[in-house]
Length: 463
Image 1 (cartoon, rainbow, N blue to C red):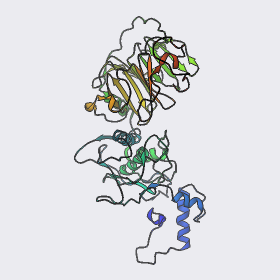
Image 2: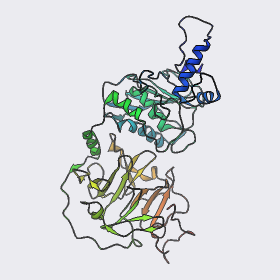
Image 3: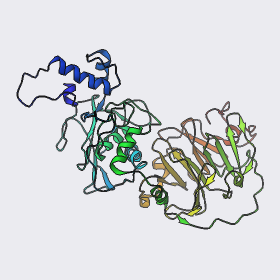
Image 4: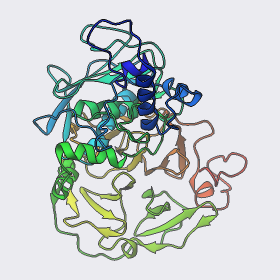
């Protein structure tokens, strides 16, 4: 039944007793085992049974046996597509469901000239729907928990269906990761068949949650065979989704006094590049490690052309860019080299930001000002008309009016305000035992005799 359902055995056109010969069965099993990188025995052994029992996509596996690489099933005749989320799973908070589905598109927009825009009513090219078993308009019935997780129609039908009997999750190895499965089904909706490489996104079997999942070269080659490569010019256009206007660099000024890392509040903090933590105050920057802090240096010595007294800073592992915000301007660096055409002016995002951070779970950048925030996708179309949104709607127990923010290497999100800091978990809730003293726990300064009460011990390893 499995071999028939997923295309390894072809049932005869005429009525028969449903039996296949030993040679046919052995050949079908060898094809499945080869595609699954199992020992090719032609026998229904334990490893083969185990692989067949794994959860997977509902589409067949018509692998490209001729050239043993990606399979193309069709293509869209346009490059700018719309999508609509028809309903949500109750397994996750609504915003997290939307973020996961939006992040699924990012895998494909990062390597092609395709763009996607969400619509909330009327027709959409691609439509997401969660349901159980069979419903009207669904091409294949689901089969309960496990087994088939989702399926999609090839271009230009545009339907993507998820089995609501699964436990959909994000940021954890429990359940089924919505982002990865959605990205896989989008591959079908864009015209890709299944890949015979088990580690590819377009492989038919779900291998579990992988926090730093990246497209396999076969995925990239397949989608680019359909739609072409992303041009450098397109990347430069996308960064202007913040509506940036080119401006002249500011004239040099006299540096501010050398700050004391043990006093006052930070201007900004970022994690990366080179997996280092950089703290900013006035015209100076220093690194922070588990064992202490590095020497103070002028910001302009590390990032030529950048003035100090920043409003916010953030590093994006997704693009390798560092964004520095000050007033109504933004500077963009790759490592320590300023990108051509910067600084530029911010238009739709308010000036004088308080803080910025990159959230790995949805690969978006959050910009904060007062009690509001903007969410920005660097590589997709952004509708900023819905922002700023209130922080309290997403960040539970966090203060407004931040001075700095960062996603750190231990997976925590840290908000800084005044001389204190808060840590938020993956559900974006402030953890117990906070706020704590920034100077003591981050800058390795002696505990203050007065002011905020400090918890017992230090927290240098986890912030």
